[in-house]
Image (cartoon, rainbow, N blue to C red):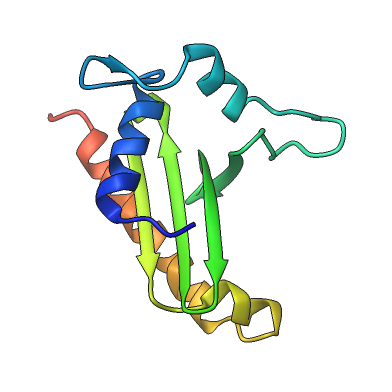
Length: 127
């Protein structure tokens, strides 16, 4: 599946909104809950139905990654901050990482860490 940053940001808004986007119901609230619920915690404490749990800078996110020839993506949500991080690249970083070439994947991880730091600054109370 190929998508744009615009479409993914609207998808993030709908998920963070419990299935609503701009006053319209896009997903049933139960569907959103099921997407992020750990399906078989005995086997994996990270995997929901569609989404997986991941940690960036020690903070938990729920999201999905994607990879193919010519593209890699990260889509991470932090519902308690009503925030999302979306990284789209024209790099097959995750495909190459499976072959032992980790530089691209490591670069995406550093980008996510920097975005998380920015989210922390934005969410911090003003003194």
